[in-house]
Length: 139
Image (cartoon, rainbow, N blue to C red):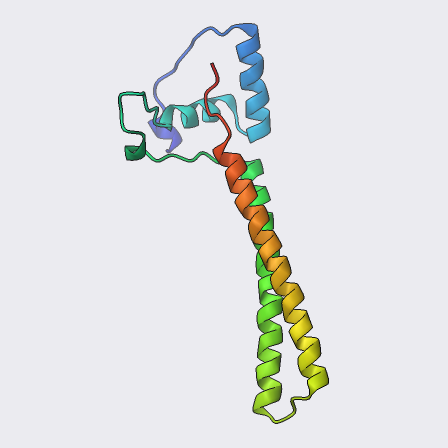
């Protein structure tokens, strides 16, 4: 949304504890209070009478996105190592230079890399599950 579209001003009172919560959440999300509140306004609120599956919504803060991005990068690194080892095996076989020593070492390398890939995939699933359990609006 461009700044030129922001023509309305809103002013309201908050209790001290609500203001502190707002300030803390803005710091954690690394957003200004105005931007934080604009994001909150755009979140669809579903009441009990409405169908929750009609309005899918997932809100990610920068900190959570960084953690997921870091895990995806780690996952990609280990996946790339496994693929590189498999390509090496293919190269040695295609050129008739495959020995049991080379194949054993590469197979072990692939196994280790794929174990790391699986571990990182589980961490990513954990991060996403943790995000799903976060409450957007508190009572």
